[in-house]
Length: 224
Image (cartoon, rainbow, N blue to C red):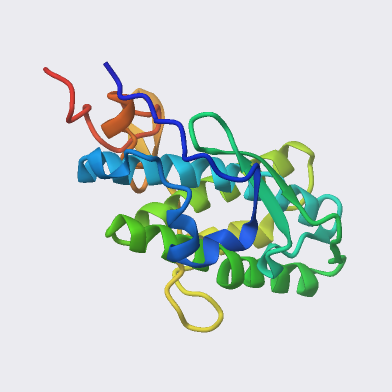
């Protein structure tokens, strides 16, 4: 049976987004029985936590930027989130204040600030706690931002700025772009192409099954 994510510690109802900026503050949100988790289960729990967190912050961000031409400055860390009964973030409230981003230059600058000022610190905190490379958490962020881009496409709005973000290997400052191509396409003869995540989210250690877009051939925790 899949292990049920335990209820988080008895903590205040809401937490500032800035909780994610430092390991010390985030550790207070870990489950009470955290030390009983095996290392793979800890990694899977943190991965799932990041997926929920990025869903609450990034899924609508691209729409707001490209459709509404407003940039919510997550990199200013103004906002809060609460935890559900399993200890995962739900819902997330960001500041009602937003920045006008009507020109492509303004939108491009907002994307760069989002990456370096918000996504990077969150991924660094989670990776340090997990004792795992950054790629997993950056991949989770990229998937949510990519989903946001797809939503914008459905509204017939140009998404070339986000397409460029996912297509380039390095950022403007020369740093490696860890959001690069979150999905890969595998062509098959006489069959529809398969769309897979570039990096496995590792949640199978908790869920005991693979996601639909998992790059693994089979669940390592299941019997053949």
